[in-house]
Amino acid sequence: MIIKSYNMVRIKEEQFFKNAENIGIKFWNEGLSKKAVKIYGDKEAVKYRQDNLLNIRVNEDVAEVWLYTQGCTHGIEFDTDDMSEFRIESNEDFFDLMLLCDTYNLLNNCVVEFKEQR
Image (tube, rainbow, N blue to C red; front, side, top):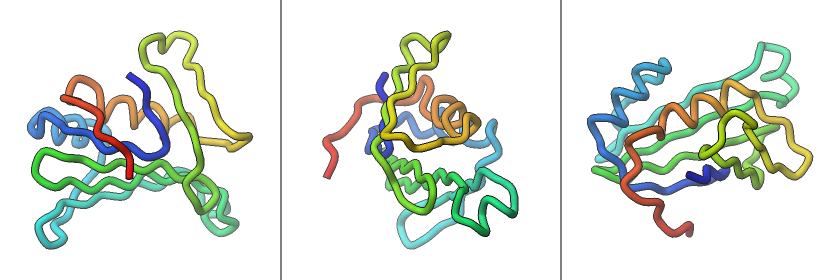
């Protein structure tokens, strides 16, 4: 599985929300969607926009997952087929390791298919 900075995936809803609960993500309703945000970094990191962010929106069985660093989304891709090496390809951006692990744990065993990016 390749996880990028922006992912649109068809999911197994029950497993997805179970995974989200296991990593401490709480959703709220916004119209017909469910949304969640999890911030990584301390107060200083947030103050100086050095924080990392996981932003999720779910519509029925489609989840949109964004990974942000330093206030904007950047190109990042990591291959979860070999997590022992935890290969991360990034354009000199620094992502919190917990953000990457949480993204993997969120999508693990619940992705039906990756959808085309907009």
